[in-house]
Length: 34
Image (cartoon, rainbow, N blue to C red; front, top):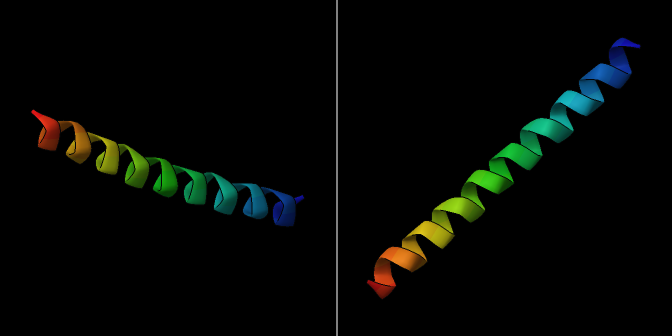
């Protein structure tokens, strides 16, 4: 059970990091247009 939780925790952290990076890129792109 602990292993399963660890795996999910890593996936959530990875998804969060990717989402943050994508949001930053989109934000910079929008700011650059204006």
